[in-house]
Structures are given as structure tokens and as C-alpha cells.
Amino acid sequence: MTDRTNEEWLAELSSGESGRGAAVADLRAILVRGLHKAVGTADGAGHDQIEDFAQDALIKVLAGLGSFRGDSRFVTWALAVATRVAFSELRKARYKDVSLDGLTADGRHLPEAAALPEGEAGDRTAVLPLLRRLIDSDLTDKQRLVIRAELDGVPQAVLVERLGSNRNAIYKLSHDARMRLKKSLEKAGVTGDGVRAAFAGAS
Amino acid sequence: MSSTRLTDGQLDNLSELIRLTRPDELTCEDWLGRVGAYAESVAAGGVAASGSELVEHHLSLCWECREEFEALLAVLRSRIS
Image (cartoon, rainbow over the protein chains, first blue to last red):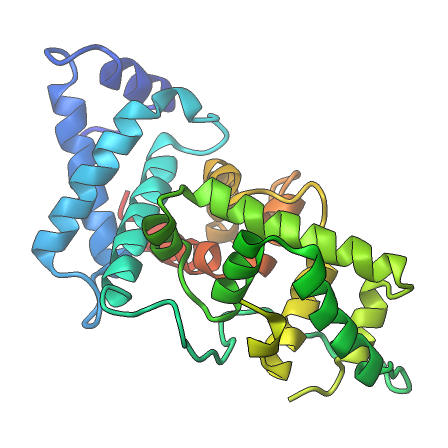
């Protein structure tokens, strides 16, 4: 398997069914090897699954050649696409029989509030009820659902499937909700650091 | 679905997400298009490429992309490609 430049990869993969066979085969082999490293642990994907993930990723890569920015190696971008495909499918499989209702959360995936310098304290008793009120009053039902799912650690791929949406739309719901809460908190006189201060030391 | 179903711990996490939120943050799809260059520079042990601030910011918010990034980094470091 020879090394190809980005331009060579793009040229060969764009050249139509008859001309791209070798490049497709080589890329597929790279994706399979990469996915074995990325997700092929004891608790991860088996070989047949990895072959399926690689095939799905190959289809996405070939369909999305025009979106490759060219600021990395082509193969790195293709491996990133493949990693996403694999993780999305594995996450969906883990949640296959899980209802979105009643999930308990430990928030382990979420960013931990940074420690504040000594002496900074906020009025948590005031901000916490305010945040609850704003969630109820300022967010749409879908925004609340997405935020709740995010806080419960539910993968976006699961929400995409359950809501019949796409990952960008799910992320936008979350972003819009967070921006709205941020602005409402600021309007109530609570800045970003003030929110953090209010929750400092929360268990 | 009301906020009363959220625990104090979840509100704590949400407060941190709100603090980190910015208008120009990348979506997961945007991030996927940019992570390659960032991952290569991290794998090579060098200084992150310019323009990586938004990539890193997204990683601070999105656990799924963070998980995918760590896996991609492991692949690059093993020199599989």
C-alpha cells in the first residue's frame, strides 16, 4: 500500500467507479485497522462490527469528499469520520432498551465546576431556584428535553434516533437553550462567574 | 418535563455548561471537520495549531467528541495510518 498525498487520495476517490478501486480498498483497510485500535477493546466492537463500521464510514467519506478542509492528512479526517460512525453505533446499541424517562445521572461525562479562589462565595440558595424557574419559563419543551438528556449522559445519537432529528439540530437545541439561560441569568444580575460561585462546593 | 426533576448536582453541571457557553461555539459537525489538524498536532507533541481554541472549547463542553478525540489520538499515536 503506497502512501498517497491528499491530492492523490482525492483525485483517485473522485475518479469514478472504474478508477478508484485500489484507493477505496486501501482506505477501507486503513479504516479497519484504525477502528480496531479506536473501538476494538474487550468491551468494544468485534471484528464483524468493525468491518460494518468501516463500510459505513467509507460511504460517508466518499459522499463527503467536498467537505474535507485539507488542513490535516486526508486519512486522519477519514479516521475521524470512522471513529464517529463507530462510537455513534456503539452508543445507540448501549441504549437500545433504555427509556429516556427516569434515567439517573451521575454527570461523570460533564465538565466539573472549576475550583474558585478562596473567599469567593455566592448565594447558591438564590441562584439555584432562579435557574430552576428559568428552565421552566424560558426553554421550549424540546430544549428542556435535550438539556435533561445531556445532563443524564444520553448520547446525541440516541436522541437523533428517538426524535427523528440529526446531530447538528440536537446540538443547536442545547446551544440555544444554554445561551437563553445564560442571557436570562445575566439579565437577573448573575454573570458566568456568579453562577459558578453560587454552585461552588456543591456535591 | 420540569426542572424539578433535575438534581442539585445536575444543576451544578448545567451551571458550568452555561458558564462555558459562547455564541460562536462549534457544533459537533463543525468540530469533526477541524479535529484532524488538531489531533495531528497533539499526537506529534507540538504546539496546537492556530485556530484550535474553538476545537478545544468544544471538547470542554462535549463529552462525546472528547471520547472520539481520545480514540483518534490513540490511533494516530499508534501510527496505524
